[in-house]
Image 1 (cartoon, chains in turn green, purple):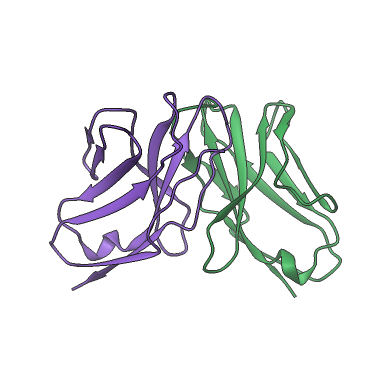
Image 2 (cartoon, chains in turn yellow, cyan):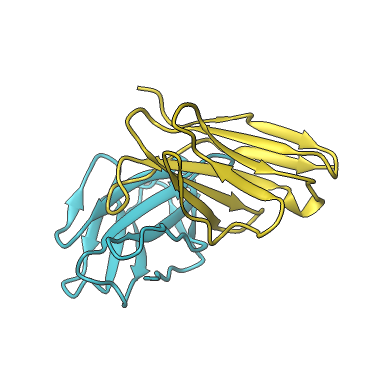
Length: 114
Length: 110
């Protein structure tokens, strides 16, 4: 049973380009969370999705950032027109349910913006 | 949102027990206490969780205060591989967003 898969592991973009980060949750998990982590800081919640629905995007910047979790395929975090401040580690986590159940994290995508 | 507070860092010697504290004074009756740890350059991994009773698994033990306003993660014999940031969070039926603070950075000395 594969764990949460994130790809790419490392992503380098120039300012103004688009970044697409992918997250395949564990089999049977329909809840996905995205977090951003800056160096030496904790995990900052970005968005919570269920299949085909955005449940809470209160942690997402209002512009340039979007997320989806289609019926088929991985969840995608998309960052348009990247800036240097977007450089960070992006982690996704999945769980089978919304409340007390444990989270399973991927290894993250390290985004570097040149 | 329910919040937790943890010391920024703690140190231990190898093969000694480690007690990592967490305060959650605003915990509600339906909140589960979860612990995760994050090794360098990796994603967080689940360690243990509980509701009211103390819990044990192969990784650690979780001691929950009787009033549930605090808990302690116990590593019975620290190893160098336990050096990580440890996060205590609440998983609640009232708020479904798992909120992570800065955690406790555990340093293990050989």
